[in-house]
Structures are given as structure tokens and as C-alpha cells.
Length: 83
Image (spheres, rainbow, N blue to C red):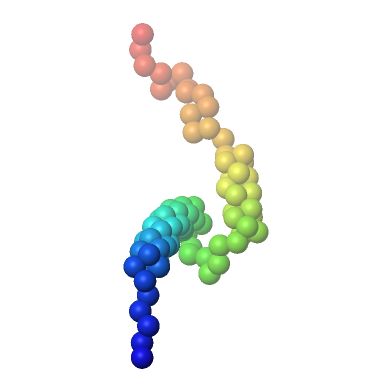
């Protein structure tokens, strides 16, 4: 003898599954963006993305930008346009 699930329970389960799927898609998209930014910035795909890894990567990015000089700090006189 098999007992079925009542209509209300079935509807609740369906809503929960739909919400879980929406949450999964939302967070998967966020992860995709982070993964692609890391690949772009570091050139590699990390095995795990942890808070420690993100902190280390962020510090490297900040240091890189602090150590570089502006590309056009001054324009030599002979490269300036005529007035």
C-alpha cells in the first residue's frame, strides 16, 4: 500500500526546489565571474578559492599597481603637438 503526498506538500516541495535552483544559478554565476577575474588577473585557475587565497591575490594586485608608474607621466618637448 503506497501513500501519496498531499497536494499542499507537493506544491511546497515544488516551490522549495524551484527556489533552490534559482539560488544555485545565482551563486554559480557569481562564482563564474570571480573565477574568470582570477584567471584574468593571475593567469591560473586555483584549486580552491578561499578567503586566504583572495586576500593574498588582492594584496598582489594592489602591490602591482602601486609599484608601476603612470605610462605618460611627462611628454617630452619634441613629442608635443604644435600649438
